[in-house]
Length: 394
Image 1 (cartoon, helix red, strand yellow):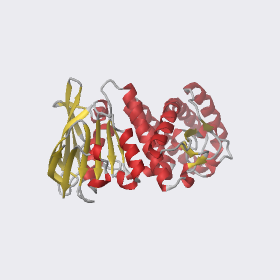
Image 2: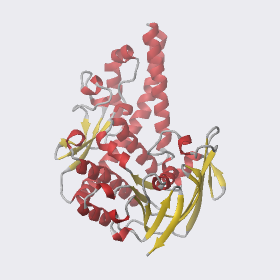
Image 3: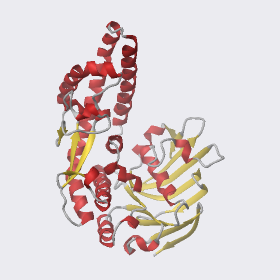
Image 4: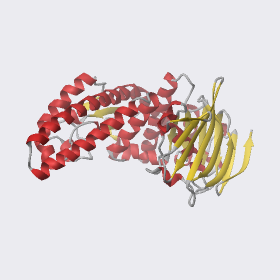
């Protein structure tokens, strides 16, 4: 799949923008703060319904306006699609495919992309929530139906936490605990499905990440992934002692079936009920899990150098694109590299250019034209102050 044209209205710093794109590499060049990243952010929104930079949609609407429009013409083989979304400040967002209204949450079915940005260093150095979000976004891109499981699970966790807080505050346990048993079953059913999906994804992703890391870094540092699952930690384990840190207990390198997860989940909830009632919060489940990243058997977080961290984060995104490509009936996902090459030495720049060479479409942003290997500069768009000032095609 490729994007042949991107149109923006009142998105970020663009009052209006019309950008023609080609297959292969497309480079957006401009000084910092001119709007390069805004272009790839808009396309990423079409496939993930979220931004890698902000948590609320209205932050992407140009100041002083009530709505923003992202419109992209997509081509996959003989099929042509016009995908549109309108972001609104004070009303629900609206989406269309080929001028027909659809539910906004259905947009990712029509367009697939993988974006790497400097913010993705948080995959290596940040909190577990960042890595959980990475896995869940990839799951939704592969199978949009899982988004319903994720949303329902999050809703159950919130409602169960409310019940636990009420039980703690009132010290009246009878009816509340009976109700809690009902919520426990819903938590286990949904959570076990999510655990199975995440651990299966990690098992598929692991060899691709190892290969991608070697291709980018130029040497094998044994990049590995493992699941840190809270349902397998003991009541005195590190997973309970610190809500934001994953301990050594509960690591799983392979997939876990929903049935096996459900058994462990129920047992863990039973063991920790007293602690949950004391704290008024759900202590086990996918919302407490982590993706453990290691280089040479050491945690990447805290041990990896800056260059190693960049290579690992890039490898995660490149491996994601490879998985999506392998099973897609609509062609490759659009691969987007935001301000990547400035952070890499020349050898890693060349290796990354080689690694992405055969993707159907690659979108790249850079502040300095010479930072990008020549083979990726065929279609170059120059940007200044939210305006497309020049386009060169070689």
